[in-house]
Image 1 (cartoon, rainbow, N blue to C red):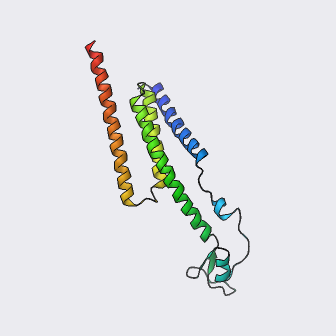
Image 2: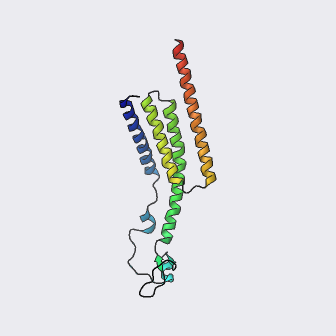
Length: 180
């Protein structure tokens, strides 16, 4: 490929990933801290476990420095809302992964099979890889090892099949062109 085609391919990669990320975020917004824990927390000094639990926090008496006033612990005010946020992030990441994996593989296949212009095909294929990586990065920390293995294996088989199909298709076209 020429320098011009490399640049066109790179721009296609960037725009493919950008369109996918923006489009998915329009219809599937991720959870935000403020949605679960509010804009700001009260400046109230919480000195008892009872009050801490009353506001949704968790009292921690093991790692707090001793206060001059005698309090034997501290209140993690955001404990409950932070756990709720983490649960929402896990669900969001799972859904994001289930959207991006097939979308990325479809874009890879589209670039490999339907675009004869090398810069466009390669750009779309690399963009598909970027989309898959975005989804994998988002969900990977939440998935257990068996799920990671199964999903990786399925992705590998699909990409190998696309590569095999792509190469066979163009091998046949090349043979037809040589016979003329």
